[in-house]
Length: 161
Image (cartoon, rainbow, N blue to C red; front, side, top):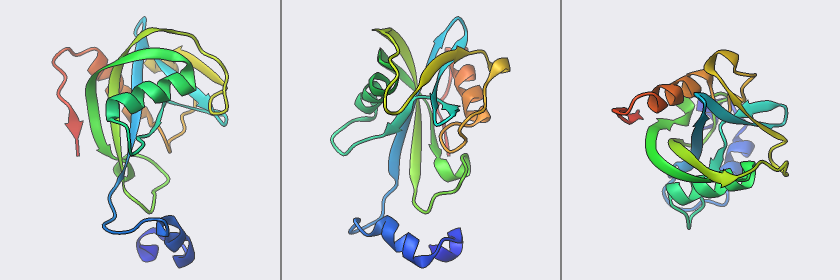
């Protein structure tokens, strides 16, 4: 693993020291929510991304998406459909030494309002032509474009790799 990622062997060992058995990818969800054909992004550490995070061991992808959006944005949502399932290292930088499966969900907003919190300092809707600087570790321009395309296509087919 160290040779493939150019990470020191000690760092690679620390990444996996709490794991036993077969190494499986982690699962991350990202929520795409729209208003007036604009997508909701959140600001963390000076950069923007789709809201989302890790799926905990006792959660489903849907429940995790709901919880992450509530924690990061303060909104109540309903996940409607899967937009894409992507291998993170094929689409995001920097590369990680472990596998991550990203699941993008199209969601409807049912209520709530933004409150600054420990993770996010701001949320805002953006048109595709006015996207801010994105945190490519979490969300890329092509991933946002894919979410716009899914939102505007009732016959969208889930993208996966």
